Length: 344
View 1: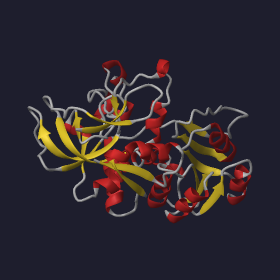
View 2: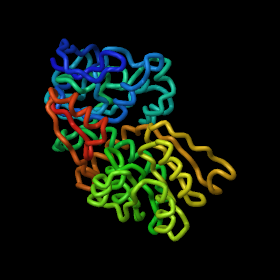
View 3: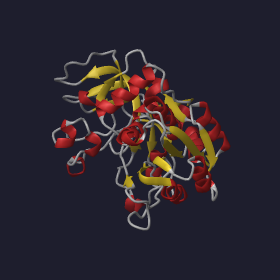
């Protein structure tokens, strides 16, 4: 089968031919219908050799959807031909977090060597993918997998962060979204769908700010030295009740610290490497800072339900698997509007 793999440190992804995998006991094989590209993939591929821990070759794709193609021994409750999204943050299934469906916060995954598909385990950017357990499948029903596959990360991750800040998103509140690319443009829609907050979108790109306006942002601000002052002006000097940083680079984190309101929330979602000092004389009184990771299985179900009622839509660029390296290059250079999806 064809697969998109990272095979050598310092080099980009390649399309290769590898054997089609067979499901073992308890496993499910999906014929992949869609696989999303993510900046996290480039984060992994940009790591130096001494920091890289994901194994080589690595089949990419932690955003995946497919149709059940073959069942391993002992699998029940799942039928060949059914369409599913893959819940990506796999855990042990037994700890307290996993018992609540929060495998994204599994306390034992690292010690047991459990890794997400595309981030250690073979991912979905291939013609077939193995899912380790049926609990990691979420039914798609009639949803178009190409249109919604990105929601398994680009929807779930912002949803998890936004739901944690829901108490701050009452009517009359203000939410700032820093970075309105793949995750951020979905985040804008989620805030609009579940709250009465005014949304201020911030980015360096006029095109991405235009997309933010299209999907529901009330105001847009160009990221730069004047951004914090403009946001303060838009909020009447009070600042933002909740700030969601989907870039995580130092300039956006600095903006977040400058614009968060007293008793507000900052959620650093992006993995850009920036750091935020917090405490007296650094952040306002009562302000909290959080670094959320992915989301729970039940939250993925809720995100897909938002898609079913068309409250959330992902702007998708489609690519055949042969053009995946080109799609990754466009993503790396910031040329993707919304999310890129490979269709094997």
